[in-house]
Length: 422
Ligand code: ATP
Image (tube, rainbow, N blue to C red; front, side, top):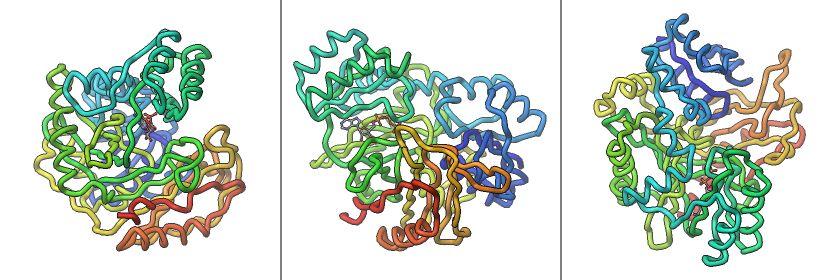
């Protein structure tokens, strides 16, 4: 069987890597892929990003199914287009992807269906936004309505920062159309967790839990990033918490979409904030897997992902049970100098250790340039280590990290720290 993975990040490398392990796989194509997928003999990069051309390629190559990694092609309607052409694809339609592509849509949806989330209001007028902030005080959270690659959220600890964020988004037009409307919401305290499920339109299949590390520096300091590391499972999601999140958040979300006339298919990612009393609330939805959460999650999946994907596109996820490696997986992101503001490209990467059953390196912003591996993006690699405890997984991951060099490399040394506390 031939499968196409759409995307070029660490998430897509991890999905393609897992799919390629299946005995049923003849070829895994990655469009456009990265330096790591280019070097893996079981994967083939395809340099196409236009959605119509991709559909042509899938038809001409006889590709059985397509898995979409990132949000942009989903919000652009890749699933609608492929289905209209009779091609099997796993992901949400453009309509369903609004849960991620518009924060105003997601918040109104959650309010309508009684899904626990922070209190909010949406604004497009500067003066009204400032007045709302003055009336509610700080800390408070300002979010660009549209997609902003993880950069459209300001958690303002002071009134001054909150007002500045409003000016930046609404007056200075910092995010263009994506920031023409903003959501201002209540600040929630607690511990975050990533809760990802697969949905085939009828059945819901939860994946292993995980926790991301959004800040650039150790101890959760520095600016927000796309994610500097993740580990799985997240001990804060106990079996009781898992049941509660399914009951209060995931099931009502899928049912709510159906009530609103939208059949949800694809990965649904709920970013949770769990407060000190143990109440989970939804910070955000993503309509895809997380990056870097996918890398540790796929490292722990034992079930054949090709079978899982086949059930997912055929609406039979109820017939499959996922088996997970009992070990913890810790994924450490290595980022380029200057990330997240202005990542420097061109550095030469050396020392990536060969894959072992305990450690694997997934690529993101890399390219193979005349046999040399070079940095091409902000997040460069994600090194995953597996171990019988968070501590052992960390040790394995960092031993591999310490072999890798490139100029200006940045990484956190504390990925998994919350797991150590539990
Ligand atoms: P992503 O890159 O995950 O898609 P995003 O741009 O969609 O990010 P959110 O996930 O909504 O943004 O917010 C980013 C981060 O900001 C969250 O992971 C969380 O740490 C923080 N955050 C968001 N909303 C709140 C809130 N209401 N209270 C406290 N912190 C928040």
